[in-house]
Image (cartoon, rainbow, N blue to C red):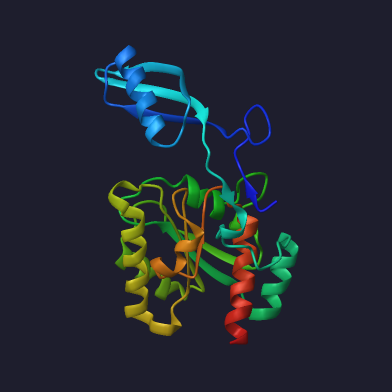
Length: 244
C-alpha cells in the first residue's frame, strides 16, 4: 500500500490520540474548548478521555478521535542511511587503513545549552542503548568540551586539535536557538577554515535530518541516534572526502 490511514480499533478507522494544554481553567468549558480545537484540526468525532488542571488557569487534555486524512507514503521525504553500520572493530580497522593515525573528534553543547546528556551518550565511553561511546574506539581521539561552549572557543579548539570532525548537541530549542546556534557554528568554521574545515555534525531531539543543508552542516542526527551510527558515518564521510 502507498496510502494509509491511522489505525485505532479496526484497520483504516483513522483513530488518533492527541495531547495538549490550553490556558483555560479545568471544567466543562475547558473540555468543550478542547473538543472544538480537535474538530478544527480534523478530528471528528473527538472525545476528551482525560483532562486535569496543571496550575491556575491551565488544563492538560488527552483527546481521542477520528481523522479522514490519508498518508501518501510515496510523498514521504526522509534521510535514508546510505552507509553500513560497522562494529567497533570494523570502525577501528577502516580508520587505521584510511588515516594511519587516530581520527580526532571534538564535541560539545554550543550556546547556552547546558544539556550534556546527548553529547555524553555519543562521546563518553558509557555510551547509549547498550553501545559504547566514541571514547571506546581505539582509533578515535575524543575531546568532549561539555556544556555552554562558545562557537569561537569551539573553532579555536578544533583548529588546535586538528580535528577531523566536530560534533555539536542542541537540546534547548526556544526561539529556534538550536537552528541559529548551528548556523552560527557552520558560518564560523567556513570563515575560519574554508574548504579545509572538519566534518560538522549536529544532533538533538528537535532536529530534522533533512535540515543539514539549511544548517550548513554535513550531517544531522535526530533522537535515538546511537554511537555506532555516528562512528559508522564518520568512517563513511572520511572515505568520501578522501575519494573526492
